[in-house]
Image (cartoon, rainbow, N blue to C red):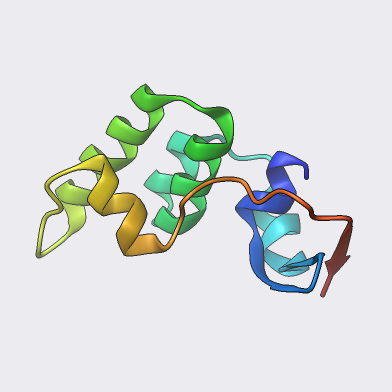
Length: 97
């Protein structure tokens, strides 16, 4: 699975990842920080997880807490909030909708 596919994935159907094509076209070239600055926090968390960078996750957490009414205490809580655990294995196909 490519980074862009994981970042803009909206769900799965078996071993097929369903990708939001509109979001991918509009924001696919943005970095993790740029996604967070644009308010796309779920996508920013996915990007940081895909890159495997704890520093990026800390940066997303900081940017999120600067805007949020209810701050999040840790990176693990941030990942839980947005439902991002890791890059799924076994994805054989990608469908852009």
